[in-house]
Length: 250
Image (cartoon, rainbow, N blue to C red; front, side):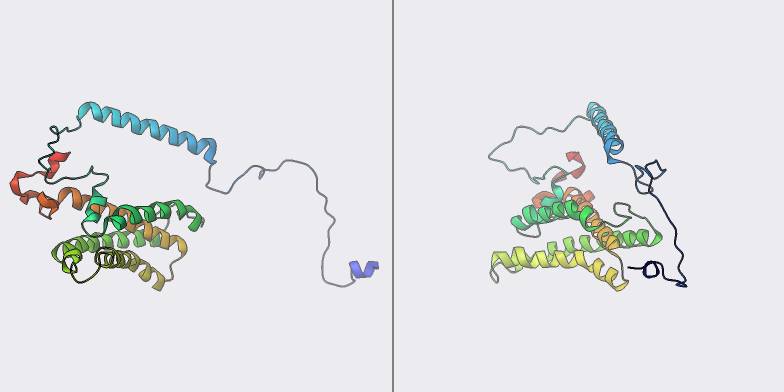
């Protein structure tokens, strides 16, 4: 290979001789902008948060005593028999579908979704909610949608319960499993259809689904705690029969 083949004449290109040297640079050990190391910085903040929450729970326990009922009577069933507040949302779901679906499949799907979220949404804005005006609008409209649709679903299913209407017309796995599951999946995925029409990115899809999950959990928890009375039927909180007061469970 000749010199002219390596450096052709009149090629319009410029060449320079460079050399690598061992030295330091401002970019050495520097991560992406606006980030911190998970260890030890984030770990220390998590430990501080854990200690603060533990202290708050301890102080609250000194002020408010946990309510203890009388000894259980095996001959008398408590009415209504409600789960603790952190499980009352699942108890509300049990009123609308089969226990396997409400108590096992749906919680498993939610936990898997939370575990997979960082791996699915790996954009630069992953984990940052309300990161833009459009993100705030998506979250706000999605939350408003859930606050309207989920209570309507609870009320309509209480008036027209599928498990009762289809008791002698369809198998249990259809009346209490397939149909309620399809209805719930449709209600959850409707916001994603609207996002698809406006060409939303993956981060915005995940943000909407996360909002649906959180707001739905709040709706089902409030419904089960505040609006379920004797027989676990729906009542207004101030119109409970038999003198039942849902706030007394606190």
